Structure formats: C-alpha cells, structure tokens
Image 1 (tube, rainbow over the protein chains, first blue to last red):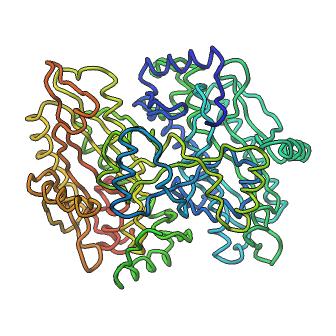
Image 2 (image 1 turned 135 degrees about the vertical axis):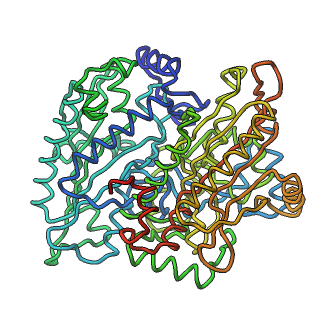
Image 3 (image 1 turned 180 degrees about the vertical axis):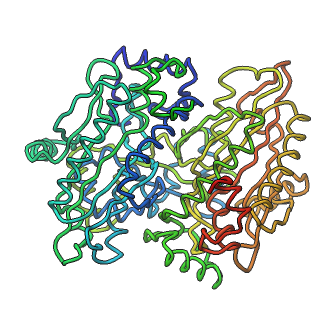
Length: 312
Length: 312
C-alpha cells in the first residue's frame, strides 16, 4: 500500500460533517467519494463561472477522457518526477479457463492481479498533458498561437488520505496558452489576477504563493527547489481546515518543456512556450462550503448571484 | 493485445470525417478520442435535455468518479460475465531505486509493468454499479423507494475498435429505480416510452429490441440467451453507419440481483428490485451528426430548439 496521508483531526471532522450532510458519500476507499446533489450542483455552477470568465478569449475546448495513451506518460517525464502519483490501466487478455480462475480468486477477494496485463492506457495525470501532442500533430501554430480549454476534466493522483481536500480522482479545469514565450508569460500573469478576482468575489480569503510540486525522492527535492527558484508555478491557497492552507488553483509556466517534447512550433518557426492555469473544482467547493457553511441557501447574496446569476 | 474489432469501411470513413471536421481528435489509441467544441457542446445539451425530461420525478443525483473500489467489481459478478471488458488500476509502490529503473524502461517504451502493483481501484464498468452498495449502506429504503441519477458519468469498456461508436471510455447517464418489483417494472416501461419520444423528437429513426449483453465465452452464450428469454434488457437502436444498428439507450431490469448482493430492503422489509435506464452520450451525438449532418447550425429547427431552447 502507498503511504496513507492521515488527515488532521479538523480535516477528518470536516469529512464526517460533509458525509452526514449528504454532500459527499463514502465508497470504502480513501479519497474516493460520490458527490451528492448540492456538492455537484455547486461544482457545476463554478465550472460555468469559469466558462463565463474565460469567454472573452474564446478558448478552444478539447476534452480528453480520464484515461490517455500510456505512451504519453512515458514520453512526458511524469514517471521521473511523480512515479508515486501515476495510475496505469491493466486488463484481462486470457482464455475462458483463465477467466474462470480469475473470477474464482476475485470472488473470494484474493489476489487476481496475475491475470491482469498492462494496457496501452493510463489514468490522466493532469488535464493539460494530452493537449500538447494533439496540438503538435496539427503542425505549426496559427499566428498568435492558441488558447485551449480542457473542459470539466478528471485527473488521477494516487494519494490515499482522509483529508477531504486530497482525493485520488477529481476535476481539474485548465485553460492553456501555447504561443511565443513573451505572450505566454504575460497571459499567465493576466489570468493570475483574473482568477484571484474571481475567487475573492466568491468570498474566499486567499493567499498567493510561489509553489513547487510534490516531486518524488531525493532527486525530487532538487527539482522542487529549482521549480521554486525559477517561479515556474504560482498557487492560490485557502485555509480550508487546519493545519495548512490548500492550493485551489495554480498557474504553471512550462517554458519549452512540452513543445520541445512533442515539437510545437510558432507560426514563424520559433520555439513555442506553454503555460496553463488549473482550478481544482472539488477543493473550491470544499473551500466555499467551509467558508459560507453547508447550507447553500444561506450563502451571502453576492456569492449566490455570482454562481447562480442574479435571478435566483 | 485484446481482440481488435475492425470497423466496417463505412464506420472507418465516418471516423475520418469526424476527425477532419474537428469533432473528434485522435490520441493514438483506438477508441480513445478528444472531443472538440461542437461534439462536446451537443453532448452537454443532450445531457441537459435528459435532466429536464427526468425533472418531474426529481431523481437524487449521486455522482461517482470514473474509478470505483475494486471490491465492488469482485462482489458484483462482473468478472464472471465480462472479464474482457474490465479495467483495473495499478500503481507504483516501490523505492527510489525502483522508481529510477521503472522510469528508464518507460522512457525507452519498454515493459515497466513489473513495477506496477494492483491498487484497490478499478475503472467504473457501468454508471449505476456503485450506487447499489451506497444505497444499501443507508439502511432500508424510504416509503416508495428511491429514484437516483448518476449524472454525466464515465464508464470504461475494454473494446479497442476504429468504429467511432465503440469507444473504450465514454459517458453514460443513468437513472435508477430501487423499490418493490411491481413499481420498478412499471417505471421501466414508462421510461422506455419517454426515452423513445425524446429520441424521436431529435429526429432519430429508432428500432426497439429485446437485447443481451456481450457475455464472455461459452457459458456467456447461455447467460445471454437467458437474459434475452426473460426480456430483462431492452435497447433503443439507431443505424449510425452500416452494417448493423447501434444501441444508444438501454433499459435493464436486474430483478433482485443487486439488492441481494448488497442487502437492500424496502421500507416494509421486503426484497427490493432495481432497474436502470442508460443513455450512451457519445453514441447519441454520433447518431445526431450522422442523421442531420456535421454542420450543427443547419440542423432542423425543431431538433435545435429541443436541444438549445427556442431562443437560439
């Protein structure tokens, strides 16, 4: 079993409260929940608010499922940085006799992993990852580059925990800019301000920070330090429950990492750069419920009107 | 590799057409596509139409992610019937040295499956499966039973093909009734008529049929015959592309299968029965595009107004 990240007493109490109120329901696996009516409704209203906020730049939706080609994970370098977070899809390829043996073991909840073979698919590690090879396949970028939208996408992170803010599979909505370096850097700064305004408008108390990803192992600590030094990643954090603030949105500048891997060129043949911003939907809903209370009808009028429109 | 189901020339030509028009985009894996702006827009408008159609009975949304506990797959009997369609989630649990070895193999696209261990999660095989243990955990049903709604859920089927109507992961919206046998049977008939009306309203030419699932192996042929004889499953089919019609919606009566497995009782202590109806979102979009053409703006006014409302 992977390391279990035990939630703080406050985090566990918040999870219990959410389950009692029917906002989330347990499945028996840590970090895997069903979303109840109100939770899902708020989540979709927030998603619609992101759509309205992004509308002026008309990002192109390109919506990938929760599994993507294994080859992309192998090529992206993700397994060097985050081997502990990746999930791979295995499947059965045997005959009837093997199927019967597998079924017998599984029915007794014994080990049937020997009958499963690695498929050509993995769980989607980040919403924007599959966009880059898809855009590279189109040839050089159009003049001015591209702005893309992953839509309401699922991503997988192998991090079992009973902190409700740490789910093993959750929604991430990403907007992605692919263009020359200057355009991309400016775009990321603009969106950081716009996202901050959007989230403050929802009554959340934010902190902004330069961030680093949870790279694996000793070599990973160096990668994290370098990412931090170069300020490649910003995060917006909220105090959902003690002890530490939780990132609910992030702004990543990948420089030419993805365009180099897949060969994405600007219209004039230069090296493309890429940046993305991501909203963690479930965490934002958790932050809203914690800030304004579990009774959504009693939320402040200005928050309700931002999410539901003035008529409701 | 699992059996590859080669599409007919018509199916492959339709897939090419969809890709050229940007409705779908290839990922390099058969049956795994990105959905472009128009495809996803139509899909979400259809999902909203299902919500409006179901609204009079106020189904309770209970939204599960694309992965669910492995234990449920083991308990449900799915591996006896459909071992070839299931997907399991594996992950890395090793140390830094093993992570480096895994990464080296993966970077060269060699076999790194030996570093992956079976996790406690599997890909969701059907949208309604995780509902039954969740409802059982609540205790006896309320008076009159329950009607539930999976929302816009992903399901996984290991069926690589270049027929666009056969995807390996796709959306299934299910409405589920859990109550006494008589109520459930009547409910299923009512919804069959309502779904038929809804889909005919969208200009689709439908066939109704008693159906059977693609059970595995020789024993499976008997299961399929029995399912057919008892008329446990109805399907609505459409001719998307030659040669055979494709099921776009189905209506399953499970009798007491799931309630027996998990122990779901009616309010008066009787045995609960269950039934579900499912809409296959991607197939419905494919059927609409094939019937009315790839230019959505030129679709018949009554179809557009059903999907987008009269104002657009």
